[in-house]
Amino acid sequence: MRTFDFVVVGSGIAGLSFALKAAAKGTVAIVTKRTLVDSNTAWAQGGVACVVSGEDSFDLHIKDTLEAGAGLCHGDAVRAVVTEGPDRIRELMELGLHFDERETANGGLELDLGKEGGHSKRRVLHVQDATGREIEEVLAARAREHPNIAILENHMAVDCITTGKLGFAMQNSCVGLYVLDEATGEVETIRSDVTVLATGGCGKVYLYSTNPDIATGDGVAMAWRAGATIANMEFVQFHPTCLYQPKAKSFLVTEAVRGEGGILVDQRGHRFMERHHPLKELAPRDIVARAIDAEMKRSGSKCVYLDITHKPADFVRTRFPTIYETCLKFGIDITTEPIPVVPAAHYQCGGVRTDLNGESSLRGLYVIGEAACTGLHGANRLASNSLLEGLVLAHRAFGKSARGLHEQVAIDLPEWRPGQVQDVDELVVIYHNWDEIRRLMWDYVGIVRTDKRLQRAATRLRNLHTEIQEFYWNFKITTELLELRNLVTVAALIVDCALSRKESRGLHFTLDYPERDDPKFGHDTSIRRT
Image (cartoon, rainbow, N blue to C red):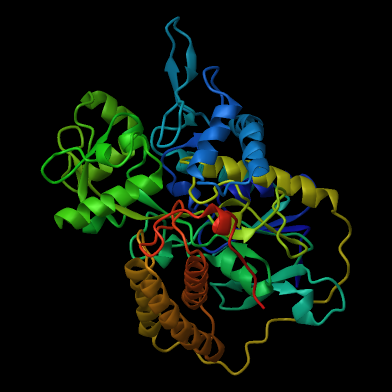
């Protein structure tokens, strides 16, 4: 058994920010199932929304966030993240991150702020179109240098260890983790009074996603099994513009392209967003994604097009170098021709219910970043608020957990007992079930839903869950099997939450209940394992 003051699962902006702060107070283990820099954060193109301009204000950022959230944002969470954001951004810059700047009229330099859908002002700080990657590299470098941080790469968290499962006569608490070492195939026991899940989202539960392959909802599934409260999983944000190119593997085309003047057109070159919302291409993401979906269904086309060819070619290449180079590899010159795009699963607005300090309903278990549901996003996330939330909640979670830090109570945790299991002999079973879950979710639990589709999904997922659990207990665990187990759990949580919301709001749109119903459903969907 290895013991740490803090254990962090995940290595994105939230997890690394927490770990760096916690390392000043004690020993920290970072558990990450790939390398340290493999995270959802590293794939974030657009930037970080934050009030840093004299032309902007906290009240405007709060107003924009509340409007995007369609009545479900928690006001205290929105205010905390927005008002505390500038201090966290300064800390990030002090660590060595350099956001893009531009020359002012008097020859000086100022931050170059972008504008994205739902924002009333330019407030998105960015590093060209690879902001997340730059943030990830800066934080990872600092983590690797710190003597108090142990980095466990290629280690997959299996489950939380709780006092309830151990049979202790005390309040149910998380006291550690079981962790699979991929290199040895052995499961290690890690003891800590502070466990932080910062595992990112669950985009890979859908057939088409902008997320990396690691986004399998691990934190939400682990917390659910441990007994923590989960909320608002029906609200899955589909990014409106994912490159439509089979070999591109769901490459995201940042919303900042539309923020800089890009327009959406159909296959005949006709602009269509003006028929759907007064803000046109800069409407909130849920509206743009549904508009594209409707346009594709109406015309029978496989995609629509994002056109920024009316902007100077040098500007496009300089502002969006990653997108320009990637599209060029597939024979698309975005300075002279429009980009074929389709919506794809992008961000989970729900997650493990936490307070404003990242504390879940399970003592000792903190959840931050995309895996958490703090109340900031409500029914639809405002673009580029997620990285800011990761920074703010990491700081708050550290503050709360460090205040209660003391010498850990001596608890001798049991070693992992694999039982009479055998090696997985047919990986095709895992891959088949994975593919079935993702196709099922895409077809039945996508941008537009109905009760009949949701019920069909629920029935099949129950059967799949039984099959996968049997597989889990009979075979030696692997990362692939653990991810599959988490995927089916998270898929079922999304469907169960969606079935309980008999209205359309934000990212949850159902043909059976097309109107918003505030008296009956103007609250979070909260569920807990019984």
